[in-house]
Length: 207
Image (cartoon, rainbow, N blue to C red; front, side, top):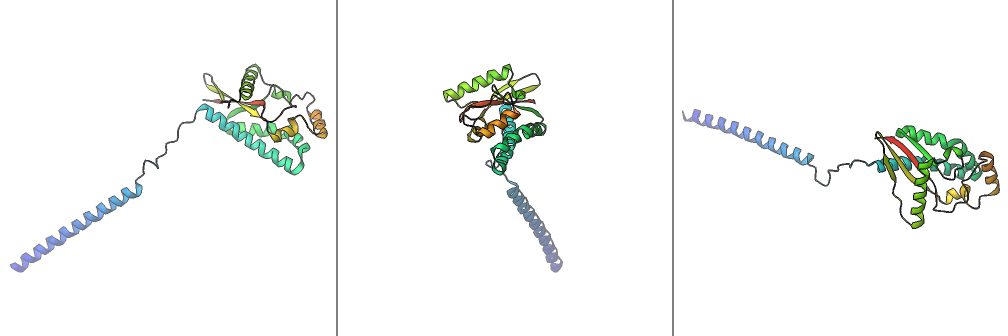
């Protein structure tokens, strides 16, 4: 009788012990899972929605990077004279390829164009004048963004730098200018100094 009683007690104790062990292991597993998957407030980053100005700037900068990389490569490998021909042949296709990539219309326009195709329209001329005024006043220009019923128009200045002046400055090498005039008889894009507004990015895209 006593032996059976003790055996029953032992069996119950084993069952309880197993259950407690299983419960303990389960809780430990739950805690480990929670710790592993716990994300601190610092780790949670919510990407802010891009503004139309941000989108337009992204399109302008990426297109400028593609054009600049190819132009610099041509100058370094073949010289400034070859760069004139490069711009004549490759600038439009490269710009168009970026327009396709971004599903946008991307133009570089000017009040003093080299290629007549880059002549700014009346609205673009107004924006060029505004950016030139900002530069003269030493104001860091903000992009101009205009919304239409189903689209966005973005404008931002194209600023001259040292590389630009090799073909657009006041002291262009005679052989370079001869090539420019041969390719662009109506060229107006010359006589600039560094940090001037040579034109603007004119970019249109859907909302």
